[in-house]
Amino acid sequence: MKKIQIITLFPEMFEGVLNSSMMWKAQKEKAVEFRIINLRDFGLGPRKQVDDTPYGGGDGMLLMPEPLFGAINDAKNYAKGSKVVLMTPKGQRWKQSEARGWADSSDDYILVCGRYEGYDERILTLVDKQVSVGDYVLTGGELPAMTIIDSIVRLIPGVLGGENSAEIESFSDGETLEFPQYTRPEVFNEMGVPKVLLSGNHAEIAKWRQENSEKAE
Ligand code: ADE
Image: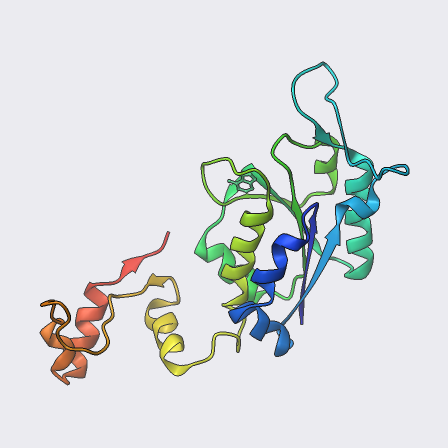
C-alpha cells in the first residue's frame, strides 16, 4: 500500500478532499494510506513557533529549518525510504507522465507544503524533488499537493474501476485526454449529438474518438 504523508500548517484543508470520492475509495480499498502531519506540532517553544524573519532583512516570515527537519524526520521514520517532495512554484512542472510513474512505482512519498513567503533554504538538503503545478504563485503548497495526489491516486491499479473509465485510460497508453462524450437526450435545447455516435458502427466510433482526443503533455 502506497503511503503518502503530507506536512502542512493547515491539516483541515485536506479533510474534505481526502475523505471524498476517489481518494476515500482508494483508502477504503487499501490502495493508499494518507498521514497528515501538522508542522505546528514540531514548532519551537511554548508558542510552537514555525517561522521567523529573514537574515539580511526583507518582508515576510520564513519557515524555520528546525520544525521542517523535525516533521520530515518523523515522516521518514514512519515510512522509511520515502521520497521527500517540496511543493514550490520554483519546482519542476507536474505532468501526467509523472503521475503515472509515481502511481506505478512502489515508492512512498512525503509532500512538504511550503507557505507563500518561503522557507529556509537549508531544508533543500532533505528534499529529493521540487514540484510546481504551474507558472503561478499560490499562497501555499496545499492545493498543489492535493492536485498531484489526486492525479496519482486515480492511476493506482484498481482504484479507478469501472470498465468504461479503464477503456478511456487505455485508449492510447493512458496519456490521452478524453474525447467529447454525450448522454441522453439525443437533442437538448436544439443541440444534437454527433451522428457517428448513434450509428452503432464501432470501428467508425473508435476512429472518431481517436480523432477527437487530445494528447496530454
Ligand atoms: N506553492 C505556491 N505556488 C505553487 C505552485 N504553483 N506549485 C507548487 N507549489 C506552490
